[in-house]
Image (cartoon, rainbow, N blue to C red; front, side, top):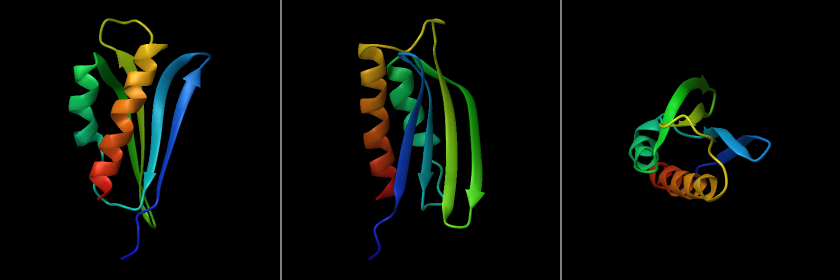
Amino acid sequence: MESPEVKVSFEQDGSQLTAVQINRNSRRPVIVSLHRALLALGIVVSSYQVRPGPHGLMERIVLARSDGGVIQGSLSDATRAAILPAIVESTI
C-alpha cells in the first residue's frame, strides 16, 4: 500500500496566522473535517479554494476569528494543533 503524500503550509502575516494550504494525494476535500474543529476555536473560514491536480487536491483556506480579531499566540498554536490531526485522519 502506498502512503499518501501530504504537504501542509501555514501562511502568516508577521505573527498572525492567516491561511493554510494543503496538498494531498486524495480526491476528498479536508474542509469538512476541519470546519468543526475550527469553529470550536472561534475560527471561521473567510475564503476557500480547491483545485484538482494530477495526483490529488490543493486546498487553500483563509482563516479569521469570528470576533474579528487576529489569530496569533496561543490561538495560532491551538489552530495549528487542530488542523494537523484532522488532515491526517482524513488521509487515512
